[in-house]
Length: 127
Image (cartoon, rainbow, N blue to C red):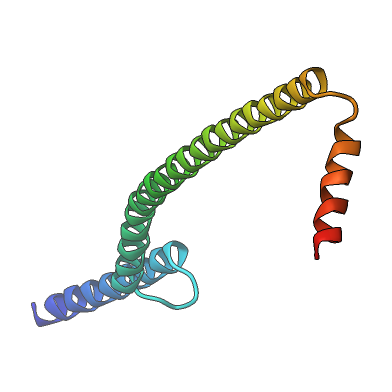
């Protein structure tokens, strides 16, 4: 009986060694670069967390970009309105100036230059 139990123990030990070898072989197939399962799992969890964080950051940055785009568009629209107002004012001033020149041309005598020159000459003679 002792022999049988010794044989049983040896067989169990060989079976255990065989299982350990199979386990090592399977582990080496799963992992590379000599890392163990826990380290690999932790690294995968970190990568997964980063992958979850990146879309959140992306959405946040996209919202910020949209806000900046809207602000730029508002500034541009304000600039366009201001430019149009200035053009309108310039056109009105130009029209007024042309109108006044037209009045001067049509209602003041052609000899005005002579009269103005005489006035200046008279002023100079008095001095």
